[in-house]
Image 1 (cartoon, rainbow, N blue to C red):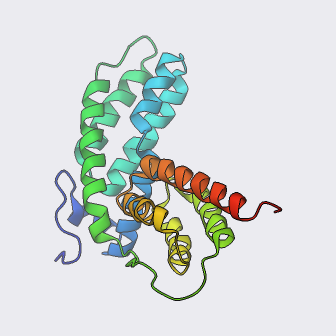
Image 2 (spheres, rainbow, N blue to C red):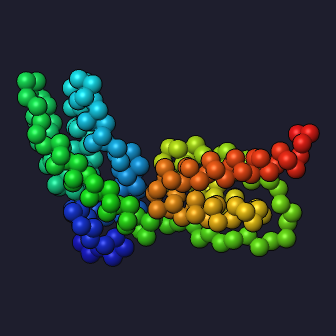
Image 3 (cartoon, rainbow, N blue to C red):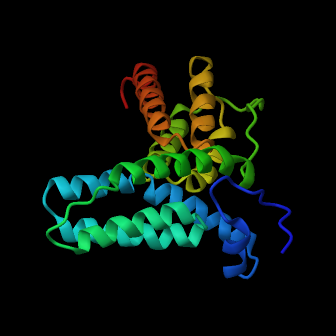
Length: 215
């Protein structure tokens, strides 16, 4: 199978993964994106479950990670997860493979975080230059609706709100922050994007209250 749109990702058997999906590249990219969103903290969750003595929960999380690693075509991650699962299934045995899993997962997350923004279709944001009057209430509403998507770490769910945000006039004092926030969202740095969103919201909200003291 000739792969044209999706390059070979280090550590990923892209061709095998696509064969399983009938060559559906769009679906494969969606699976990679969901993996990054939903499994980014998987190893930390496994470790915390073990610290709490919740062995069955750790087994469940590891089994899920193993299956999803196979879906995205990362054999090393799949095999490392399988080793931990096998260890944990022996109730008297402690796993010795957690550090290995952490290292492999870190590489997987780094590769996906680097590659996906260039592979997934994203809106092209440009600064609004229209002559409409500024509407801080509308800006605040956009930021309120954007926040749940950022907190849920779903960049693509953010895009419609971001497009709406770009149709509005921004205060000069917030232009850089808002543009930086959008860049962070596109690069899947959702924690940092959320911090900027909150800072921008507070600044805009304070400005709005000063300009509209009776509202």
